[in-house]
Image 1 (tube, rainbow, N blue to C red):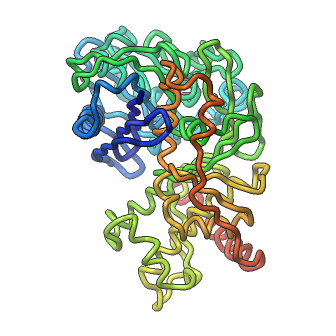
Image 2: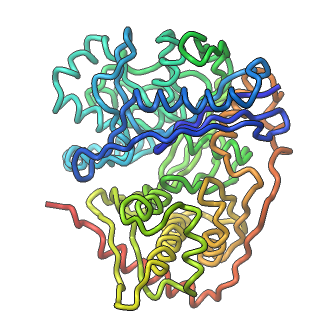
Image 3: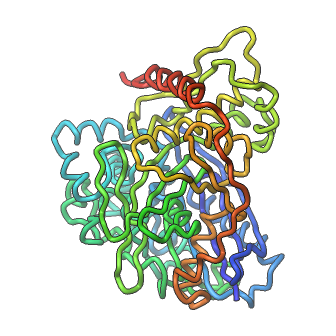
Length: 490
């Protein structure tokens, strides 16, 4: 038995087939365009995400017998918000991406009105453009004709998981799960449902939002005429970071992981307890079982890590691929005191400054591309340390995501944290988590505990740098972050 998992990320869609033993039997991938209509604005065309999903799935079906598939699991970029016509399934505008900063003024207005403490109490989040709620407020304020059709019930509102399920099912289901709902500023963490109070604050009609399903179980079903000839139950849903937590089998309270993707996200399972933080960390829903049992997590969200490498490739054009970074960075023993703060879309945890912008300091005539590439890898490690300085740390950190394949990055990370970094053999844990959830939903695995045997260590990185040297480099980073802050404020 096997499961198809769809991982709809920020820059592309991955489709994988996961077998009962937890191995990937087939894989497809299709990138889709990023749209930047103004500085600080980031958008995706929903139709392009859907076409990428079909293309990635088609690649998989060319390599794997569809008759062996038992279910579909979906994981996705979480805070990106889309609208679509309930009848035609076409979208009236581009989706507003989690990286988008256009709602900074709305957040500041709500903060000035004193709403943030109550928002944080109910949702576990903070007033930042990162989250979906203020994006919807912006649409109501700036695109009234479109918003009128949301209010009338013609247009549905949802995160990318909801959009994909609508497309897969020909519009039959409008659903999401708690992990995605809890990233919208509209979800009551303690109650486990949409908050009428928050919907009122942000001006979002409850009827436009999806129903909240369990994270695994009987959720929806694909329509073969819409989705590559497949008629399968959609049996698992999770936002990408919660899915990676599940895929790393961090199933007990206290288990933690760091995923290096477009951004980096550190999550700690807190069990049935809603975590609270005064240090810039978020409280979020991790998953909900079919019986209704909630599991929560504490999260440190970093907006730009892998996206900084992508910028080196596409923006500066000083590397040909992400895989080049380890080789190029190894050409120099250190960054030559060059520090790169990749606040390309502001700063997330623990600083939460939407007005910060990317900053490179320390450049001299002797600076080469190798120094800048190494400074980029170091920046990723520094950003993770920023978060973990505010979180209790054990003696190991489990890592995953595409950039975790970079041995040099993993070693820099271990040196900065002063603890071991463990990389599993399977680093596609975001897709793996979605597959695990869907497999649980249809009985491929009997219980979450059955999944632990699938986690196999690939390599353990021990700290090799002396603490004084690591701390001095981190102090330079902290100074550079200070210089990057508030740059885009009028």
